[in-house]
Image (cartoon, rainbow, N blue to C red; front, side):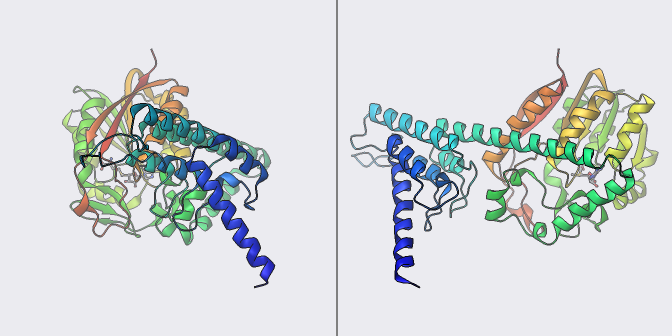
Length: 425
Ligand SMILES: C[S@@+](CC[C@H](N)C(=O)[O-])C[C@H]1O[C@@H](n2cnc3c(N)ncnc32)[C@H](O)[C@@H]1O
């Protein structure tokens, strides 16, 4: 390597370290100057990374508030680390960190970049008990995700305009093909650090497409339903969640219920317990439908099975004027955009004015901050569609033993937040 290139690299490395140090010192004036002069050769200097720790300036600013575990007498303390350890200093450190975090976010820092310990800046804030900084990171995540979702919506609109002249069937084929090719082979692997950092919505998005899943062979076991790639489509540990959801959505006997996604039939079993006068089930996977029939679901009281994707079935039901007091949505391998379409386009045509609807709230459940971000994103979309939402926390037991033979644990957070939605007053 030529001598001057080596020196140049050392210089860049020193500049990176200086930027990270400045962020950790919460020195806003210097940080502003360093980011403007951009000597680190990065597209955006606020997104540089320490090669050893993987820390970004956001990580550095937050890590600098790490609480000191030892008092002078050696006992544990909750104080923020500061030379004298006074409360005032703790507050000053936190206030300076807050301003630094806000500045970095305004400058375009990525909210969910991962360090070498697989932590986003928000994960770090949460682990260190820095609630205010954690909330700042959650809000940054919400803004990024909302923007991404809207941009996807606009892209779809643009695509629609371009395709106006095309035959509708051709267009749908094209869409499926794109999804399928983008699936292979990267989405068969668990999401990597790279995917998480470059795709803001990665944590909430399925890593298998719906069309691929619907063609896959399924394995039905007592406690789980798996697809070809050993993805857990449904698992028995969710039974308590399904029982509580069914009780909330269908509080009395003799009502009409629509369930989208039969899976292992757990929630449908609880719905049947409420003796509904009409119990419609939409199920898209041919093997699940065959399994349902082998268990006699088509002969149960009030049951009507609709074979196909909800995207194709629901518009017909709306057209027929079929209405329900309760609707539940729990599908598999569908994107957030699909769910948003369901809640903003379909529910209103199917739900009685006094009705309730809900969904399996598993978006982003493999990381607490993603779960918190998506709770807020969903809240906003549900609100925009004209509904109120109420949440109830349900403790999820430790699931350590559950994942053997399953490709990827899709649940790590401690509490399930059970949503119940109704029309706004
Ligand atoms: C997670 S499971 C549902 C579990 C169910 N709540 C239970 O209690 O057992 C998801 C189900 O949705 C079905 N599904 C996936 N995509 C669908 C779609 N677009 N339309 C209808 N059903 C779909 C899957 O085949 C699967 O049976």
